[in-house]
Image (cartoon, rainbow, N blue to C red; front, side, top):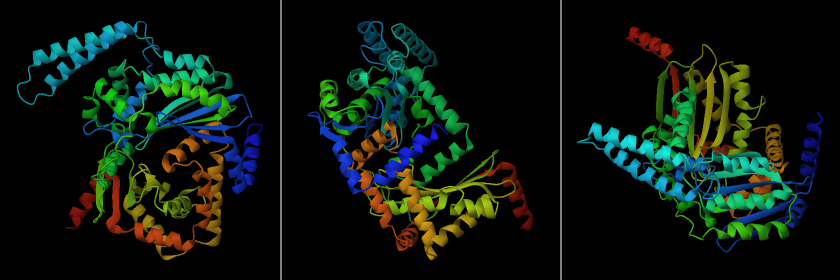
Length: 508
């Protein structure tokens, strides 16, 4: 309770002041500056405690993975913690030569391995041994985890990074008197990254894939579902990478990805906490200003064409049944974007949501049920998806029937005044909750600045939620949730699938 009360007080305080007047107050405390090299920096003052948080957003995620190199954006995120030419090495001059040899021997091994005709097994094994020996030599110069340990010794908390389809982000918090250390460390890893221990880390990422996808029935279904729903756009590709591509891309490939996308014009940095622009901006200019300017990368060209027929993918596995379906929708810039948020909340937020009440509480045919927007990302046209896990003894077909009944209600019947009011209140509270600490505020400011070119859109979102009407919900549901726009993914339990096939055969 002692922890809860301050959080509630902050939430109530923010809720009471999130008005035009409050936006004015935030404008007084928030400064935006674009450095000469193109980097956008936001500084927001919050003097509650002598700490600060930062959030760096790189406008590149797995959707930007080069063709044939799925998982590369995620791979570089891992490498960003490996240090620089000054951090993480015992002797960089010698290490650099050793790493060059690693790459040379790797490409000799890879080229022989990829031969379709005339592969020499003895030569392949010799190339592999030479590559592994080069890695062992390069590892002699590594100071393991030095980048992270320096920050942790100086009080860093919640240090992490994340790669999604649309972005790669880096974040942690530090005491206010470590501001210059932060600026040095963060700018260094984007100025002088070193691909040390790359192939060891590539194995780590491969194990991540094995755990999240290959050994997880839900992960396997999602991957098949996503690749079925998107035929042309990069959302088709697995963000964590396909096995063959994870096993072949190189440290050189990762460095090329970095040089293309980790440029100042493609990055936004937000600093929030016990700081002032007068103190932050000179330090940021001193360190981040060293990163060379470069043009913002060209946008993706591939556009997903309209879907004209229902698509279905069925996996038959020794696991519990799972049901998922998705409908194509526009990206975050669409005027109806907030309407999709309202529909998602209406269907899925808590035990009062429509899907929980219908499928879990009343019909008892599902253990879980939800409808959510922006899958697998929101930067490009994406999916509004529905997901459910059938209860014991129930099937995906039962789920599908009940799910469609709830979808049809959205199309044919107005939501109630009470439902709409409750949804808007929840969405408002969720947004406010994201501003209740330095980390959340830094993330929101950087994200809205990057997506909309103006962090103030964060506050304008509230007005847009308030403007959503019952007619908007029916209109958007009607244009989106049509059979020809639907992709269905089902995991059938092997035993149940066999029994069903046998019963069908008996009928015939």
